[in-house]
Image 1 (cartoon, rainbow, N blue to C red):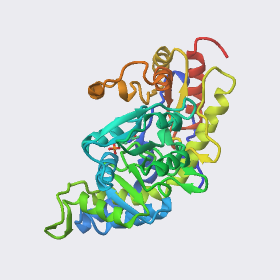
Image 2 (cartoon, protein in one colour):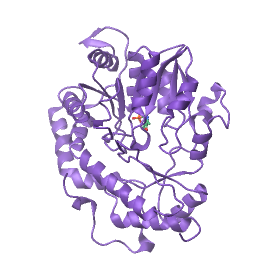
Image 3 (spheres, rainbow, N blue to C red):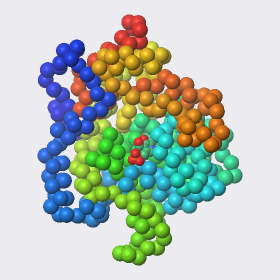
Length: 386
Ligand SMILES: Cc1ncc(COP(=O)(O)O)c(C=O)c1O
């Protein structure tokens, strides 16, 4: 681990002048611009924008980082999920269990392959898929379970894997928010049959555009994904099956190779910020995130729960603090899912979370005084001194 001097600045502005962004990628770029500029110039000079050598180099590096045999670079986290479902034979007539609190892409991938997403409720302490609720949603048509490591904390991967194995189902892990998180002594990406990642710019490991990957120890699955991402092509202009254009771009792969070398430092810094928030908010009515034993949360998001969330969020905005909500509408209540006949009240824990959760600013370059300011303003915005 390196030092964190790049994350600190000297003189904090006066409180009146202070605004705290939810995240700010410019700070990250400023800290590593020499390396990034060199890498981008290298790609431009070589004039190679798709495939070798940049994509395969990053794939090897990322597979080694997570501890998997294979990594297949793709165009986004959404395409990683969709192609994985397709490669594993999930399609029309199949049901796929999906947590009801996740980014919509998890369910969209299921729809894209012609299968039906079946939602399951979440645990209200980890915000991840509740394995007990999964048991009640299984039917003869269930083919797969997508487990999401939401906010950067691994879900109950062992328990869900046990359910999947006992029913002959496929478990796919959506780790689009959990690069670098660990479960026991293993990194996310080395545990499930297929783990899907997003390199959307704001992720813990983000490209300068779209990107994604699947990691796996299954050679046949990796080969299938490589075919699917590139028009079903096994060699130039020979197409084994209809496929897609879902390739990772060389420029993005070159950027990701540079950033991967910083990822552990960045996660370490995120964890320190989370610990600082935990300390500053201790004893208040703010419910802080709970890291489950044996897991390392990578704190893509630091999500608290507060009563009167909407007015708290407004007061924070007035004090210059940007926050987020991940997510304000559970998937079963999204207009996009209205054909599935769910109703308000179907997923009480997810619904209770949706109205109380608030994501505070967290990114490696966030300064200590900014974290203090956010915590102080949050306490004030609760409407009483605690
Ligand atoms: C949990 C989850 N799944 C899937 C995705 C989709 O990834 P992408 O935006 O790269 O398609 C995201 C990205 O925000 C995500 O957070």
